[in-house]
Each structure stands twice: as C-alpha cells, then as structure tokens.
Amino acid sequence: MTAAAEPRVVRRETSPVLAFLGRRLLGGLVALFVASILIFAALNVLPGDPASVILGRNATPQAEAVLTKRMQLDRPAAARYADWLGGFLHGDLGLSAVSLAQGQHETVWHQISGPLKNSAILAAIAALFMIPLSIGLGVIGPIYSGKAVDHAISILSLGAIALPEFVTGSLLIGVFFVGLDWLPPVAIVPPGANPLDNPSELVLPVLTLLFASLAAGVRMVRAGMTEVLQTEYVQTARLNGVAERRVLWRYALRNALAPSVQVLAQNLQWLIGGIIITESVFAYPGIGTALVNAVQNRDVTVVQSVAMLIAVVYVLLNLLADLVVMLLVPKLREPA
Image (cartoon, rainbow, N blue to C red):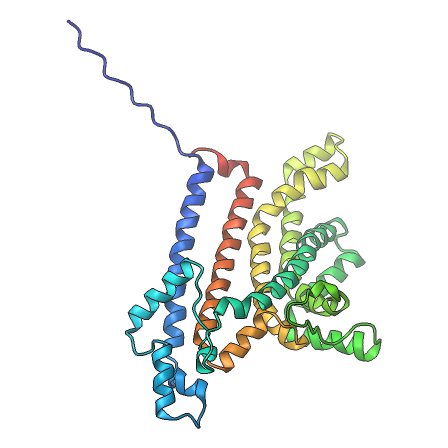
C-alpha cells in the first residue's frame, strides 16, 4: 500500500506594502518610546525645583510642599513617567502645573487645544502652497536650464536657505507694513475665534514659513528632474514623437519625485519647527507661543505634552512619505 499523501501546506505571502509599513510603524513606535523617555528625563533633570519656580521667590515652604504634592513630584520618577505615558496613550495629557499652583484644575488639553488648532490651520495653509510650489519650481528650472528663470529660482532658493525665519519675518514686516502699509504686522486671534476670519493677518506668517521651507524641496526636485531628463528612456520617448508635456509629467516627474518625497516630508517637519519662531515674530497665538510660555513658566506637563505631540507628527510624516515612495516606485511593491 502506498502511504497517504501528506497535505500540502500553502503559504500566503505577505504583501510587500503591508510588510514595509509594518516595519516602519514598528520603528516609529520605538522612536516615539525613546523620545518619550528623553523628553521626560530632560524636563526632570533641569536645575531647580519646579514647584518653587512656578510659585516664585516669595513662596512659603508650606505652599511649595502643597504644590509638590499636587504635581506628584514626591513620587519616584519612574512611576510619574509611567503615569504620564499611560495617560498620553489614552488621550489624557494631565493637569497644567501652573493651574495647580493657582488652585485650579485646568487640563493640558483644554489649555493647548485652541493654540493647536490655530497652528494646524497655519501649517496646513503653508503646506498647501509649499508642496505644489516645490514641485512646480523644481520642474521649471531644468526646462529653462541656464536661462534667467532658472537663475532666479536658484538665487531665491539659496536666499531662503540662508535666512532664518525671524529674519525673513522681520524683512516682510519692513516691506509690507512699514514700507507699503499693505498687511498687518501681527496676527492677533482672540480666544475661540477662527484665524480664517481675518485672512490678511495670515499672509505674512504663511509667507515666512513658505520662504523658509521651500528651498530644499525645490533644489531636490530640480536635481531629480535634471538627472531623469538625461536618461535613455526619456530620450527614447522624445525620439518616438511623444509630446514634451507628456514626457515631463508622465515619465520624468514620476521618477524624479520618488527621491524628493523624503525631502518634502522633511520640509513639512521644518515647517512645523519653524512655526514656533514664526508665531513669536507675528504674535500668533499658536502652539509655538503656548510652548514658549510654558517653558518660561516651567509648566512641565504642558511642555512634555507639546513636545510629545510634535514627535508624533514627525513620525507620521515620515511614515506617510515612505508610503508615497512605495506608490511612486513599482519595484518596491514587488515581492522579494
């Protein structure tokens, strides 16, 4: 008798996209965990007692002891870190230390939700212009290589890289407010109001963010387009009579964008970092202003939460950039 045939085991191959995203997501979670430790440690090794700093020099030892108890500073650092991280994962950012010193119980989320919305609007408007402008100007450069348009784009890109946000903002105020009196020099948004109610106040902050974050993306797209336009398949498409517009937008741009996506993601990250300086220049009540005030007041819980939220945004932008690269490059979606 012949032995019974063994059942055949069918192995299902994991999608390369899902496997790639899984690895990136795991790496992002590890990075956020390390960031949380560094943020908590950095704020808890600063010199001086937070309770005494918040209450001021005239605080009595009894008042400092009460605030220390309310802020749970008498507990071990590991226990406080675990409580903070667990609360953050559940959406509970804790109570503001300054509000506790004032005998109130204002949550960190209630304190930063308004500024966070204002900053999100400002960043979204800047990103809405930054991405297409980076791609458009990066494509125009190689098309008019060596001409006045190309030289103008290169000079503007170099100037944007060289000037920090506070210098750019000050120059824009000098031109559009002091010189021309066209735009307001500050962007004052009352609590609870929508920044879009007065769009003229957002023009100079958006221009400042754009000028600071646009340069690297333009230069990267331009370099990629210049390289791709010299490849054999682009030259073959031109020899076969394919329309120049189709060659540029169908063949060249798709391959030039893949290495530029990470740079564009970094530009978005720089844009978020530049918000802190830009908001200070234009007195814009966003998360950057809230963070500066929290640092000055030694409001540890607010600083921890804002820094962690920024870290989460950075990781999500990197993950999104990796996904876009996979969509642009078919080879990355093929099984190994």
